[in-house]
Image (cartoon, rainbow, N blue to C red):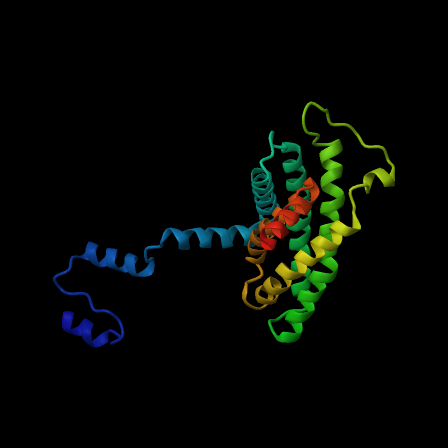
Length: 242
């Protein structure tokens, strides 16, 4: 019977030894079909499944969490005492909705309109994201964070209250000089990143990689909206002038 098995079996297949018991043969088959996964592989597989099934929810959550961490880091570096948790909540709200949810929708739409990784498609997606989408997101931070921090998430003993329906108050946080500063940082950071991401990073992973890069960018956004940025620049110039 073993000789007949040898003749009938494909030579490329592994022939079990006649001395191996049936349970051991089944165990070997299971081990072959389901190789052991490392924790990293398990994590990436789980993440891919979550982003595939809950794309927008994952983009919303990860952007909010990373922005909160970035704002806390900014306040820690500036030795803020006490920590302005209202500002943290405002940053998380704008980041989760704009950098997370809306950006994920726009990234998906860009991929639908300009599919592929050729130079023409990558350049179109990168420029549209840098010129149009990034400008909207940066404006949302400059307007939304001070607005939310003042009315919905006030720091200290102040209580939340409805804002007056006055455009000058709603858009009071927007400052052209700060917008230009954020735009310069956006160009320096995200044009190189998007050029690589649109070519090499799978679409379902982009919200995570974009959120990770945005967390670094959000440190600068927090510094601008908290009023630390100019002080940091002056201190850096002072150190370089020595």
